[in-house]
Image (cartoon, rainbow over all chains, first blue to last red):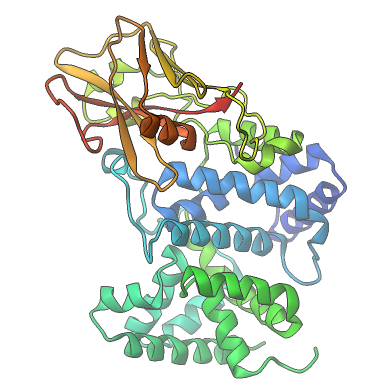
Length: 190
Length: 238
């Protein structure tokens, strides 16, 4: 359901306000939060879990958590969508680990209607300044190292799975990523 | 801002946020978030730093039933702990028709699941009835599964909808350990009553989810579904 187009700042403020009202038990505000964010959070969970049903279960858990914890959201500490996306990623990765996956493992029913997991085209996607900065900083890393970080982020893969995927020893993968994280942090310092 | 977290704290936070660690390490990190302010702040920092990547994730509309399930869960606190499984597909598409169409069979398979989900009765020893409805989107083929934990009788009632020629639906239990247990083929023309063995009864009581796969008519006994999953349902206690 497309939301009315708002500037990024106005959208963020509206979402913060809806989250605050959700924290007070306002169901209409909760519904607004859901309408504004569920497609994005579902995309995040689906990308990690690779399976629609599991991603929908996670999405339920995410919003039940949001309903219960919205009063703890602090707009001074995080943007609302960052807070929500972190809940979604964490729950999706926890579910992935609970089913014993170090990385994605598709069940049989996905064979015929797997969601499109390819990187989306830019069309219709609003890329933020945060994204541009992060892209710039990732671009400063060794391409293989940046790719490992992106795979970890999008697919919730462990060090072990990433090492196996790239055919490098575990120690090498850890050292790639740890070095890259330190570089990223320095590059992203305000 | 107060003193920056040390390097180890930063690294542990980044590893947690990226999702690089095992289930045990994640649980430890989640406990630490609640007790260690520096770590919690470092986690916030990494969530913020890496969030930009989320822009690359294409939004995907979840099915309407997700919201219905969420509303149901936030409305009834006793239900929350059960995490009701939701139906596979609520689009108004034909059940068997989808299979006949061919490659998009799975997209067309419509299933509805939870009817009512009651609170779990922890270690409830009293006999009770478990009920699941595996319903198709267009109502062409419902399969109602009722199980009595006292008598260990399982009653399977198919309503409408015949499978395509040469195909036979099979009923599966999804065990708590994630494995699948075949309950047998479903004769869509006739209801069936089965008395389950103690072992099978225990598995049925322990299971929440049921599925129907569409197999070749001469498939015989299977250890896992080989055909498409065309219906799903969730047991509720009644």
